[in-house]
Length: 283
Image 1 (cartoon, rainbow, N blue to C red):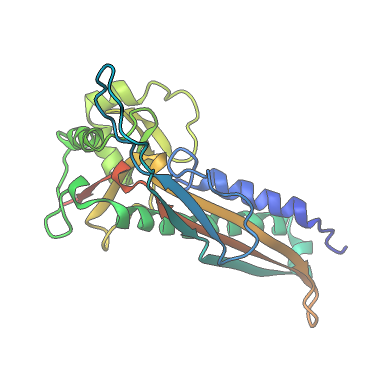
Image 2 (cartoon, rainbow, N blue to C red):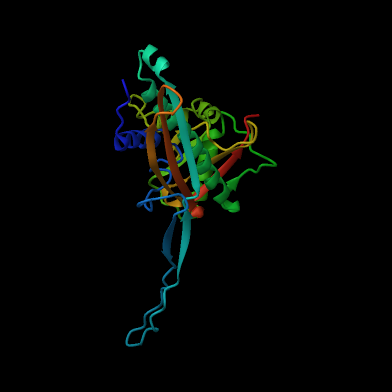
């Protein structure tokens, strides 16, 4: 039986799976405010911004200054990442399977796209963190223990406070080993497991020290050490993506079905001061 294929249905299914799997790219970590319509890789999103307004002293019965001309600027978010998948299922293999091989392959494709996009996003955020918002360094990373891992979260929160980052909606993405240290701290257990009986989505493992805690294996690191634990607010990073095309086709010289798809995306740190980072090693 030939494959009945509806491109719009499959494209929507793939994009949904990708969004559910993202950690750095989910809506409470990177904002999607500028996504709009993306038609092809290389498109550019212009993000406008306005400078501060001057506040003056008013004296009764006196003229105020002439209105100031507001300074404006713009940032360019370039959709410069283009990734594709292209797989083939032989008719014999499909006939011998009790499961929908194509459907499972699509899920696998979405998972791999997630890994690639998440790694890219974490790198964009890491590169944008201001030097003054970092705790530790690649040369001398911190080595957290179960006794002070929670304290480092507090320190990250202070850095964000000092850079006027909004309090509500802060996040921190930690590797599994750091989450394990938090689980040994009574303060995290009391604050972070309030919703432990409910399913937490997209890598979320709790709340503590003013952060939503997310766990990911894509935390930037150097050969398993010097992990760059990024904290911040969704206003810091803009992310745009689109699954542009998903097609099915039958290879001319084979019996079977093939599917290919194109995913384009880009990211920009639009308010880097709303990011902070702990550079830490396990040992």
